[in-house]
Length: 281
Image (cartoon, rainbow, N blue to C red):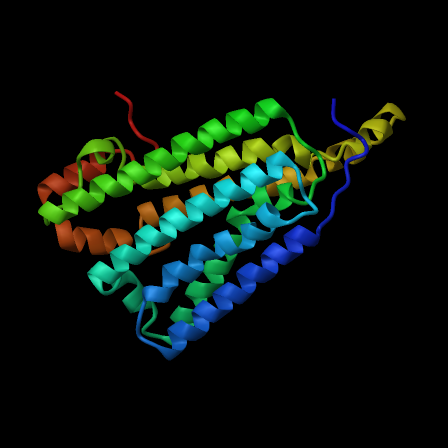
């Protein structure tokens, strides 16, 4: 049973939002002033690590759930930012970013979207860190297992594509990439779904349990789930973002890929392989 003595403190959420805002503002300024793209993923993806750090090292929150959640976010952030940094150093530039950063409005819009991504994607952790509840051990375990599966899939997909590109000039359709056009994004969805699950029980306002016993209104009972509903925006937003990139409605990724790999074989790959969720058979 949930503990009605649970306290919610919005300070960690405010602090996390401020870190995302300052980091992305710095990224925007650097993009406007310079021509390098090296800082983009270091600040955009690395901001997740900075935003989660206080929850990991803070003395006030000794909850194992919060520590595990923070460590999970930081591990993913450092891993992905490091990989993307190595990739951009090797490639020199990302054509998609070059086109976008060619104008002031494009540069600003990119960093505004990056800020939205950071705030919305991290909601399962940042909202979870506002709760004094220890959560449910089974949720922490299930969420952690799903997180591990996700990070293994994302890392494996990135490694397979990296090795493929080292020896080939065509599009990658081996390993996990034969089951999904974007298996790394599928792994990312599992990562954040896992973080959501481990924090979900702690996001329910248990003070409404007493109110429910006193014949509270339907709205008052539903209101206790408001933080959990907000946290669910993370996977919803990520799925929207990934689908938009995969079908070309949000970025020029599909157009650029077709221009680079345009062939009957590539068209067949696009038509037969799922965009994100892998085909198992």
